[in-house]
Image (cartoon, rainbow, N blue to C red; front, side, top):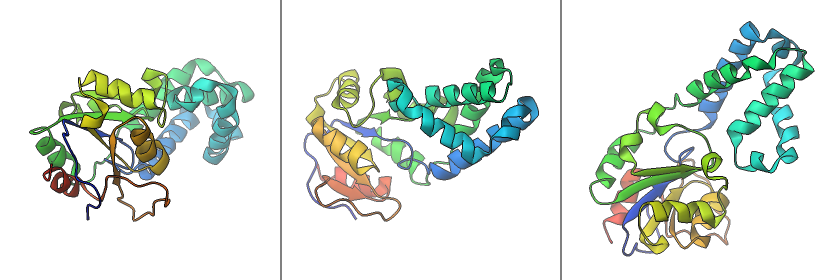
Length: 234
């Protein structure tokens, strides 16, 4: 159930996306499987040389080689596939098509049951936005109508937990940071990041995790229904 402080002067609710509004792991697992099947048909040299696990390792090897990979997961995946093509003596000109296949599967998410009705009700009282380090496409997912503003790290050029991306969302919604509640699942990226930017932070704990002792959110909830109940005290 919701815990701790009461929200004050809240005008906007901002959300993390992955593992806050839908589960990430099964989505990524399926998207990577869909992509791998496509690669086997269209760039077979890559799948002959690399397993899916080895392609993940290749991404991790590339991660420290370019600062943008810290906030642009799409660019990292694209670069890793391009590199895999070269190592396999395959045509890397098909990488854009491969990424389109992956992106479509990546956006085939299933929101938690409380998400769509919860977002609709929140829109009746608050400005609603999202701040994400991923590259989910809310229009492709079909829920963009519930968000007045959405910002992603790969578009902005900076990622959570840096304050800049949170403050940019507040500016876009014409609110002061203290007038916003940020809801997310990650203790460092979401809770501590939002608090350092001056926002109130609510922990979305859908998976019965435990917070580090030094991180204290304004509230802890497991659904948007609980979030609404807490916000109604404002």
